[in-house]
Structures are given as C-alpha cells and as structure tokens.
Image 1 (cartoon, rainbow, N blue to C red):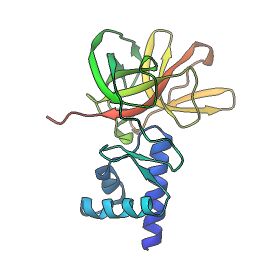
Image 2: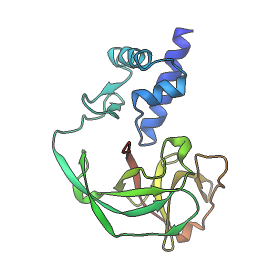
Image 3: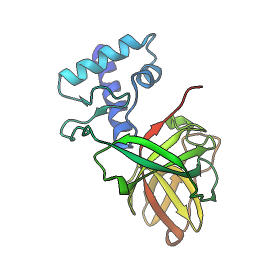
Length: 199
C-alpha cells in the first residue's frame, strides 16, 4: 500500500510539473486524500531524499524533476496583460494592469502574466481570479497548458494534437473541447506558474 501511494504521488507530481504547474503540498494532500498536510509533506520529502524529485526551497510550487536547473535568486517584474478566458474564447486584452514579481530561469522579456476568467480549467487548479505566468513560445508539446489565440480571441487550455488536428481541452467536464482550425491558431505561450491571492 505504501509503495502504491508513493507511486501515485510521484506520477501526480510529475504530470503536474510536465504540464507547467508544479503542485503545492496542499494540492498533493487533496489529490491523494491525506487527512493532513504533514502526511503529504513527509511523502514528498521521501521522494526528494530518494532522488525522484527535487525542490527549490522557499517556494510553494518549488518541486521539479531531477536534473532541471534550480531557479536563480534574481527576481524579475512581469507585466500582467489583462485577462484571459478559461472557457469559451473571448477577445484578447492587453491592457497592462500592473507587474508581478517572479523568480524564473526565463528572460523577463519572454514572460507575461494574465488574470484568469471562467472555470473551465478548475480541474487543473486554475481558478477565476488566478494569475497565470506565461513563457512566450510559438509552439507547444502535447499536454502543455497554453494560452492560445484564434484570430483575436484568447483562451487558456490543455494543448493536444490528434494527427493534423489540434484540440484545446478544458479541465472541467461541463466545458467542450475546442477544435480550432490550425491555420487560425497561434500559441502565445505556455503556462509555467499559477498565482492565487486568498482574500
């Protein structure tokens, strides 16, 4: 049973890291059904000690895969460029709301942030009002969480490719899978971090 739990934790954390959203300890606790945070923390510490995961200390989403470089100490200011829909498409907005302090290996000019509207990504712990930090890139791998643009409308979704077709998949069963014409689709970037403010 213990080995099965360890395998499930590692698989969950690895999947979230590869999707660009390392989980917090509380998210691991909720996903695995632990009664308290300490149990989840102890399991993660064992995986780190055994070399199956690595951690950047002092970060709530500091888990990473072994061999990935640790984040440098430098902090950069990333512009929050309006809002992006986590649901149906809506016109993309690029009104700078302000700036967000981010520690990253990525050059600051290749980063931007968007405030999320809609609930279609709630199953991936991306909720209305969250801020997603995005690395600018024109393409994506299967399974990445991306900000995608079709004509002048933007959305945040999981990117999937099925042969010559592209699918933008939600993380909530009430929302449809979007299948835009690939010629009208642009990838603005990959979501690499999610920020949330608790009122």
